[in-house]
Image 1 (cartoon, one colour):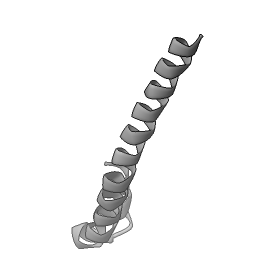
Image 2: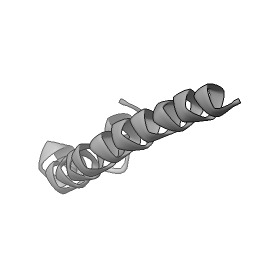
Image 3: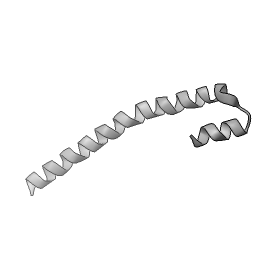
Image 4: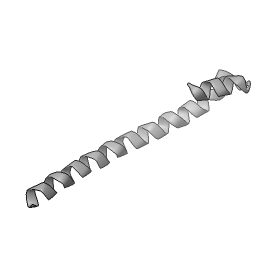
Length: 53
């Protein structure tokens, strides 16, 4: 929302936001699964460590 307000204040209009929104969406689609994978991996490490001790 903050980016949209700044773009409108600078006179870029909604068409100028399309590329920014696409870039943010693409990065979110890449980073979210990566974060989930790292979270699951860390949970598995904790389980293994507690079983070993």
